[in-house]
Image 1 (tube, rainbow, N blue to C red):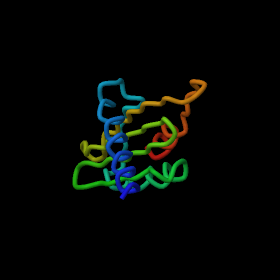
Image 2 (tube, rainbow, N blue to C red; image 1 turned 90 degrees about the horizontal axis):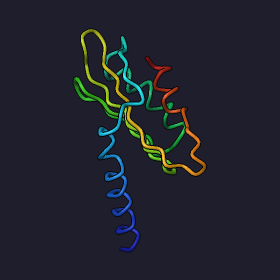
Image 3 (cartoon, rainbow, N blue to C red; image 1 turned 60 degrees about the vertical axis):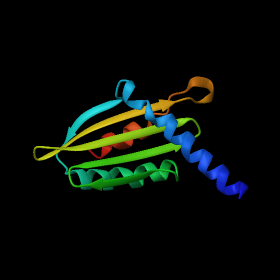
Image 4 (cartoon, rainbow, N blue to C red; image 1 turned 90 degrees about the vertical axis):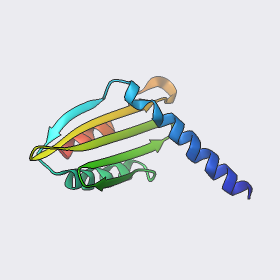
Length: 112
């Protein structure tokens, strides 16, 4: 029972950490010629290679890829736009030493 409560607490805290992300400036805002599903399917495995917690989903005209790892909270919103999709990436990185980890952004760009 203690394990279930601990897991539930972690899920709630992770949700709180990412809820204010859209209040910050996007780290990336771009268009891709790929449709929503193709773009999400390109980014998701690349982010999973960086952290096992990464996950993505795509439904109809919207998709999202998220990752949380050691103070890094990454979110990529994908919305259908014309023949392709609009990609907007938000992130909050609270890491020791203040070193920015640009790998998530680089992988998102590589799929454009």
